[in-house]
Image (tube, rainbow, N blue to C red; front, side):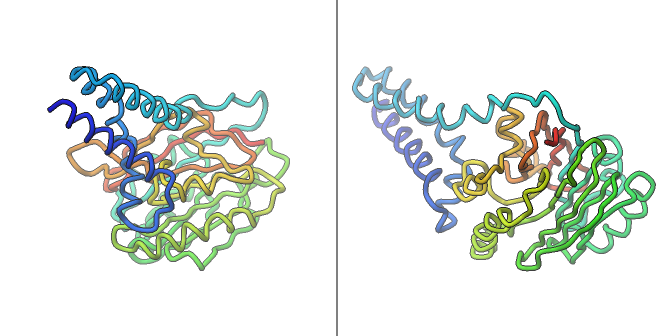
Length: 307
């Protein structure tokens, strides 16, 4: 019985590891990759099961798979060396659940934790409410509100010199150039949102495939900081393909581990790390999650050293 259990656990772990490196051509592969941090726990559990049943060859196989699992998961908990110099920027990214997030909660989140606030699922009604509430502390903004989940926006304490939107993305991509004190070059900040693959898989795959080339087309004359709900975890291959040409995962830079953000409005803790801060020519030195009343996502609160 223990041998059968061990083989089942080993098969689950191996399939999850394979999903992590396989293009997400369908929802099942995507789900397997997103859940792989949990499913790959089958490898060390298989070691125990085979050990109890004294199948030593299988113990060795499961142990090797366990080492591989540790090798792919551990780097996100180690972090990058903190820069010796550079200006610190407080950056917050938050999904606002179809505009249902509490405006007072979002305002308090920004006031306490942000120099720049990036949001997704920004509706016209919530955009108007937040613009009034944030006007004193965040006088600069670049906003693209839309009904339900298609709106994105940016609010800044610091001057925005230019902004724009890439309308090829179904749920929005907005960008702005910001004059951050202590930084010679202007900082480019973005907010974007990929469709949910459960209900719009084809749109999700199209948009996240398009995102990489769009990021590589951005000017390279200053730091870049991106706040995004990508509906993809770090274990999804398409997410990791974004991390080229100098782009880095902020959670991995900070050694924050798997920053689970969704769903945050149910009894159990969030399971999926679908919200991200991505940087280029900048380093996230701290990152954590914070609850936002009325949303089904936790917000990401980061300190980013620019330059």
